[in-house]
Image (cartoon, rainbow, N blue to C red; front, side):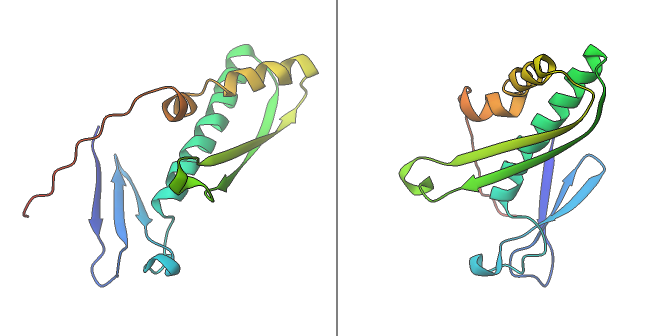
Length: 134
């Protein structure tokens, strides 16, 4: 799969992000020198975790035949120690549905194993980068 970004003409930093047939704007905050017309890369990273946990919860509940009517996910970031090697994300999922305490506990265990959580905590990611003339 290929993800593409291209600078939006006339903006200091904004990029048009294209994934399959979906498009978003990625931009820096005003403090970073951007126009804040979209989430910045840290926001997308954090949102990937929240999205993965929500989708994992819904997938798991559907597979089990459980009544989940809605899920609201909140991700809170503490980047105060990022430069010294610790980036903290706290996620909270609020689930609506007719679920027992045992089902909630099982959902808790399932979302701790979502693929993005594993990528962020258990996998070595290797990155190569090339800058070339257009």
